Length: 189
Image (cartoon, rainbow, N blue to C red; front, side, top):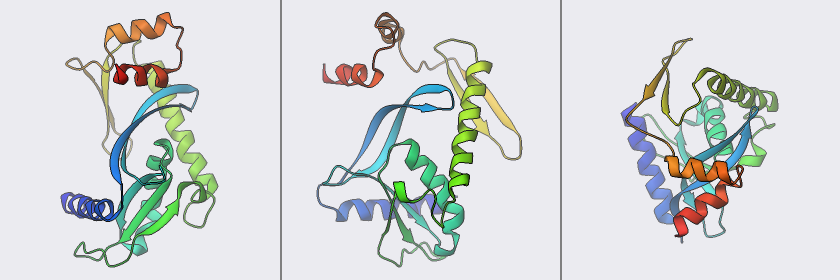
């Protein structure tokens, strides 16, 4: 709940403040998930002085097996290089030095079997493929909420447009050229 979120944010601040030239950032990237190419934006907890993207988490040490799959998936999709965990006690106090897990070494290790990693990516691909065939083709924003078990709520947000028409029109004219380069040019103007 909120208490765990607060503890995690405090540990994240501690790890980031300790590093030299370390800062939080967002990155925009494209990638294939399922049969679809997606434009993603990912918040990254930190970028170290070597240019490596870092995600910071806290966890009860004995619960790593249940925490690492989600953390790995979030980091893998966001092109994060390194997961940093701090082990906490029941009072939220991190009692260990940060433990680093390079993302490329997690899937196929004892903390996350490769078949489980592939199953998670496959499920997300299936959900995205389903959304693309279910939702009308429009520049609308949709909210997908998972309520547990098999209950999913899908609702349209008419008050919010993800990409403005002038941008999507320009992309169509360029025959879907490299989206990352286009976004970079937008922010540099």
